[in-house]
Structures are given as C-alpha cells and as structure tokens.
Image (cartoon, rainbow, N blue to C red; front, side, top):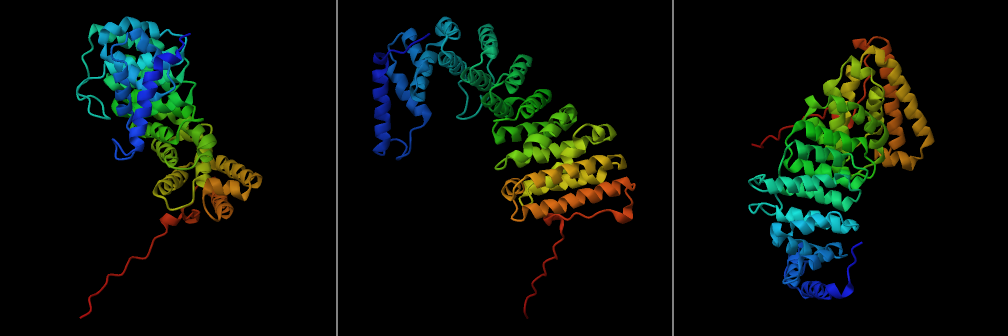
Length: 396
C-alpha cells in the first residue's frame, strides 16, 4: 500500500496555508475563497523539479488542493509519465487509483476546452489515446467511487462518443454506489446524443433510486420522456418508482419523475400497458399523493394523472377500486404529519379523502361502462375556471 510520508508534503501544506491566509486578508477573490483551480495551481508549483514517483504519492493526500496540484504536475509531464500512471492504476490505495485516472483526464483534455464546458472539437483518437481509453475502461470493475468518478470525468473531458463509451456509462448508471449513479446521470446530458444510451442510463438510475440525488432522478426521467418512442420498455421501472419511491421524497426536482413518468404512461397507454401490473395503481397513487398545491410542476402531474384516468377502459374498474382501498389503508395507518409531508397541504387528510372518493366514483363509472351522463367530477385548484378580468374603461 502506498504511504505518504509527512516530511514530503510540509512544503505543500505551507503553500496551502499561505493561500488560505491570503484569502482571509482579502486577497485574490475579493475576500471570498479561492477557486479549486487557483489552489491546485499554487500547489502544482511546489512540485516543480520533483520526480514523478515522488509527486504521485500526493494523489492520496487528504487536501483536494494538494491532490489537484499533483494531478496537474503529473499531467504536465505528458505521455512520458504513462508507464507510471499504468502502475498507479493498480495501486492498493483507491485514492491513488482515482488520482491516476484524474491525471489521464487532465493529460488528454483538449486545449480548446472553454472553462466549465466541453471541448469545441473532440480529440483525434490516436493509437495512444485508444490505448488510454481502453485502460480507463478496464477500471470499470473497480469498486471505489473515487475511481468511478474519475472514469466518468475522463470521458466527459474528452467528449468522445462511441459504443465503447456508451457501454461504460450504462454500466456506471447501474453501479452499486449511489454517488456513481448520480454522477453518471448528470454526465450524460453534457455530450451523449445517442437516444438508446440516454434511455438506458435513465432506466438504470430510476431502477435503483435509493440515495440518488433528486436532481439525478429528475434527469433520468427527462431522458426517458425526451426519447419517449424508445422508452416504452422502461415503463415498468417508472411504474415501480411511482408506486414505491416517488412519494417518499419532496423538494426541488422531485416533481420531474411524476411529470415525465405519467406523460410517458399516457403516451404509450394501450390495453396491454393498462393491464400491466402496477400501472393503474401508479396513476391512482399519483392522484392521491402528488402535492395538492399550485406549483406548476405538481399541477402538470395532477392534470396528466386525471387525463389518464379518463382514458382507462371499463376493465380497469377493479384495479381502480383496489387502489382506492390501498390509499384508505395508507391514510388510516399514517399520522397527520406524515400525510402532510407527502401531500404538502394544510388540509392534507381531508384533501386525500376527497380524492379517494373520486377514485371510488371513477371505479363505479368504469364498471358501468363509462356513461357520459354520469362522469364523476374531480376539480383541481388549477382546473377551476377563473372569471375573466374586466377591462378597465377610461373615464371621460
């Protein structure tokens, strides 16, 4: 195992402290913290004249600024450092392995890359770069998230898109570590154009949503809806998400899986999908548990769910009735605070009971063959027509 000797990084720590001190005195940044790039640049200077093997030890340093400096210093050495990098990729210390992948990221990042964006022109895949891509891809089975994050960043930096890269990203979207799944969902939007890959990544992320960031779950659902014609096979995953996970998280971006998932169901709705396990339940559960407020995202989700209910066949009457019974059990087993956390309405329980009655009425209507004269009404706040504003008349 690689061990960092304290004496080796005293100079680096001193430079880091000097940078922090300068910030505290109102130096670069106008009193705000230095950027990671600035700190890494300062630390990179301290490695000038040192042997690559000596610098490599700092890839496992506890300070991100020191690691960034070591990464930059090794990348400056160019391809002459590749034999060492190949050796570091097999090190027993995962932070060394992850740092080695970061060196490759920096080494092959095109020079015309604008700050915070991808390169204007993807690099030419030379024989040497092809070998490096294969080398990075071979790390896919490494269990450490630092390594996996480095792999994703490598392919994002060079912006190469091909079948090999697609396979890597799809595998990362299914990784056991939720941080890797989250990272991959975010990476894909930057440069991957292949619809099948975007759909596969979105499907894998929604398949294992636990501890994935809400933003990444939102992106996953967006990919499915953006490529809706290629996403029908993903609907069972969407249905499971709406039934099991969706109502357990609230906050920014949590409306997107509802919106995109329900629209995907509506888009593909036919007899086979309607009879698929969980589909009707997911729509009914969304009727009850989508927050009952006037935020646009939730309004859109509620409207979509109601549209789907109107399109159900009489054969779904029993499924709607069973879903209503399930929701009654949930209300009976939950406290007012628990229901409030899901529905986010001051009259949460009362609002849910109103919607349960709507489901029961819908079940009876479907069982009766959907007679037009007795269609049950269910008014959402946003569907109530407001009286038109009177035009102000000028006084003569």
